[in-house]
Amino acid sequence: MKNKSRGFTLVEIMLAGVMAGVFLTFCTQFFLTQLNQYYLISGNSKLSEQLRTFSKYMEKDVHNSLEFYVFADLSSALGFTYASTTFPKVGNCLLLIQERGMVEGGRGVIYYVGDECNSGTKLAYYPLYRALVTFSAAKKIVEAASVLNQLVIGHLKKSTNSHVQLYSTTSPAASGIFYATERRRFGGSNDYFPYIAGGRHGLYVGTTLMQPGLKLKVTETPCNFCFYSRNPRF
Image 1 (cartoon, rainbow, N blue to C red):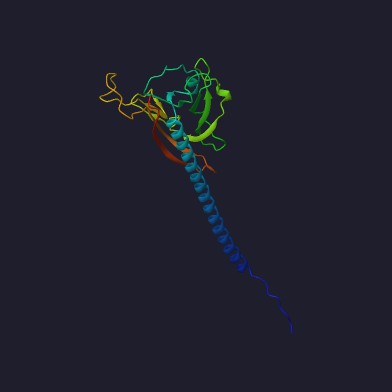
Image 2 (cartoon, rainbow, N blue to C red):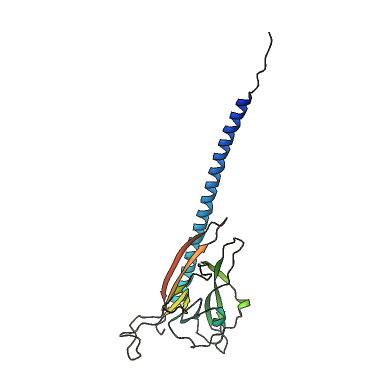
């Protein structure tokens, strides 16, 4: 009896190849979909953590401040002379006076918007920094910009006009993410009227936080806070 070994025909090989291609395409698509979801979820988680960190630091620092001042930028704050600023004021740098006020050895906290960067993601944003500062006997900040111990507490979205996403007042020239409000008085701002009991200077923060994420997957959220100092004299 003669044995015959039967192989695959060309049609069967082509059909098997097509089926294998369809299966691999499905697997690849499923993998890419799940990977994309991972990037988005990871970005959302980091953004939520960033928002909580920013709000908690800001709430604690503003509530514990003896007084605070807002400046256009970091350079203006480092050259600050005591009582040289009036309220309200808008800008991208905030100086909070804490612990014995502006005397030698006094302590403060400074928040400021850094220079534009992209961190290799090809997507520009602005870092938001927090740093501790001390004061000299001349009531000046001792630290220079180069020696500030920076802590990044947020990434700010770059707006369409190539600037940081800002909170703006009625004046086009006055814009920034920090807006200091004057202590409220009964009957208006006239000095003859007393302060409202419990009224304090307030600080409003308005901007857009973003998380660059992986593979250019970007998440963002509006950031709007309003806190008041607990100092009865401020």
